[in-house]
Every structure is written in C-alpha cells, then in structure tokens.
Image (tube, rainbow, N blue to C red; front, top):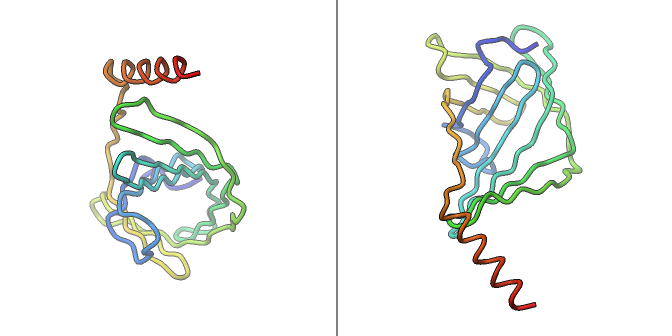
Length: 147
C-alpha cells in the first residue's frame, strides 16, 4: 500500500517531460493511481484518464502497472460532458522514486528519464447547468428535424 500521506489529488507544477501538459491531475487512492492530462482546445477541453496499480518496492521506490483501458471526457462550454472509452496498447510498467517535502504539499516522482513535481490539489466538480441541458436539447431537436 502506498504511504497514506501521498493519497489524494495532486496537480502537476513542474516536469522535465514536454509531452505531459502542465494541467495534469494525479489522484492516488492507496494502491490505485489515476493520471488525467487535460488539453485545452479552442472550443472544448479533452481529459484523458489512465488508471494503474501501485506496487511498493521499498520506502522510496514503487512500480506502476497501467491498465489498457483509457477513459476520455470531452467538456464543452455549451454541451454536457461527453464520455467515451478507448484502449492504450503501449502500457509498460513504470519504476519510479518518490519523495515529499517537509510541509507535505509538494511531492516529487522521478522515473529513469524524467522528473515530475506535484502540488496538493482540492478538486471541485463542475455540474451541468440548465443552459447546457437546454443547448443539448436544441441540438438534438435540430438533428432530428434534419433526418
């Protein structure tokens, strides 16, 4: 089981890996981990959630085994959240070293080639508003009338 002080939600503040966006979220729950890079486009936001299991090697080294299932969520300004699922074929286990600062607000994860620094994060859930539901209804009404 992963140390209890690492459990919770984290937000990426620094990385040496340029492929990982700065708005990446990390959620650790005992021996499960979820990594969610968030990419902003002009009209929508794409969230890609990848889950894995943590195996502890010793006090500072862990191994993450990723699942092949990846959840995607498209979030637009006027439509409700659009979820769909995909598969990731190149899921290789990841060995990492982890450490935390004295204040327990920053944690550092180091892999063979990259370093990631996360800050503790308090998530909030965005709810579908009545305007989004109304816009969805209008869109479906327009599609049905065109058929």
